[in-house]
Amino acid sequence: MSDLENPTPPPPSEPPQPPSEPPQPPSSSSEEFFSTTTTTTTTSTSLNSSGTPTSSPSTPITWPQDGTLTQEWVQNLMTTFDFASRALPPSDLPTLFPVEVFDSLVLKASKVLHKEPNFVRIEESSGVGKEGCGVVVVGDVHGQLHDVLFLLKEAGLPGDDRVFVFNGDYVDRGAWGLETFLVLLAWKVYLPDRVYLLRGNHESKYCTSVYGFEKEVLTKYGDKGKHVYRKCLMCFEGLPLASVIAGHVYTAHGGLFRSTNVKPQKRAKGKKNRKIILSPDPSTLSLGSLDELLKARRSVLDPPWEGSNLIPGDVLWSDPSMKPGLAPNKERGIGLIWGPDCTEEFFKRFSLKLIIRSHEGPDAREKRPGLGGMDEGYTIDHVTESGKLITLFSAPDYPQFQATDDRYRNKGAYITLEPPDYDSPIFHSFEAVTPRPKANPYYDFEDVIDSDEELDLASMVS
Image 1 (tube, rainbow, N blue to C red):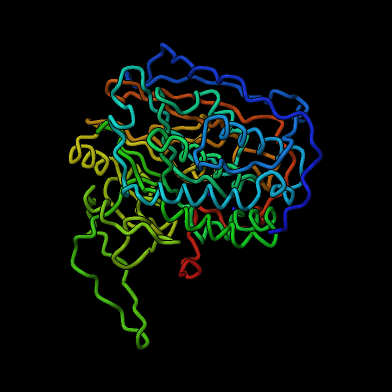
Image 2: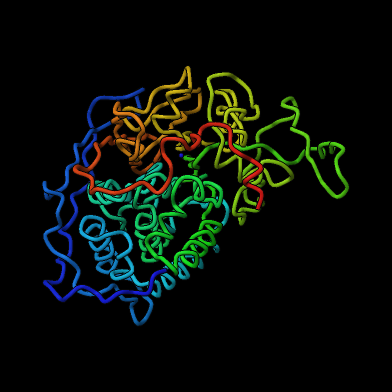
């Protein structure tokens, strides 16, 4: 917290070999963390130290005739995007992934996503509760394709014994947001009840126009770029806002949200037909319910910061604080900040034991006194009588493009939850894949406003 007619494909060569069977999830350490958490650390490097792929796809990817994806198709997509990122200029991506295939994938994924409720209950129908079926929770990935590919292989691919929940922010800042999002959409289409993609604040029109994704898509797909970008925005609108895993674990990108069952705020006087909502009185704020979350309207390009539909913006933009209470998030200009007392209230009201949210990388945490840094890819922010609040960030060495020589060099992390209760998180930290392929940024990373600072709200009006 970013259409060019298809040229002639490259000459035939050796077809890519399917990736080898991924390793099983790393075993947890015996050392206890807060008595119920364990952690492991992994160093990730590219298999080819030169950064050059050993084989290239021989033909463009085609959509299956019957429209049914297979694991082989999805893994070939991963291999193809990895190859393209290292060996081809961005504008050549359509030679390997034609816009017609993009349309088919996004259409099918959108149909699946739009049928899901605002918050998805991940339970027995997804295998949760069955012996040996674990859940992997992933935080922000921000277009860092190679780190996502590594994470999928290290944690173990989605399947009957492994469910994935992604907390959003797939795009922007990194150079491969489109490829990252498409890989995850492909897994969602292939295994809709084993892969859950939640929305992040960067899955919006405003953020993608500022932090690079829009320009990335236009660069890669040329005169078809506007079409591809519009389809992605439509898909973003279908992403659910939150999940509840095994009845005990709440996950969302930003976190908690307000109740909208309050008296309407007075309107300030303004020009005729111009409606201006006064900022809410902090003393009137109260936590919202899961029923209210279910009824919120998520199909908006940019979640509003005023009016009656505030829950989506809260879920995507809010942050925890060590200060008790619930208050407007003045630092961001949208959403809320909430304290440990609100976390405990949320736990008790909905019989929860764990909250896993994301939204804050090392740059954001640098400006949050009282909260831990993101060096290891996660922090435990609130420890209450009923459970824990965790911030999880899965983009190592973030952001990809930094204006100073002194990089954060943070690790990324993911969490595994194991049966029967799924409420004792096991942390897995990992280093960035190196060397990263050379790439140019798609936004002015030196001058653009930080996404954790107050936003230009006027430009978010659609």
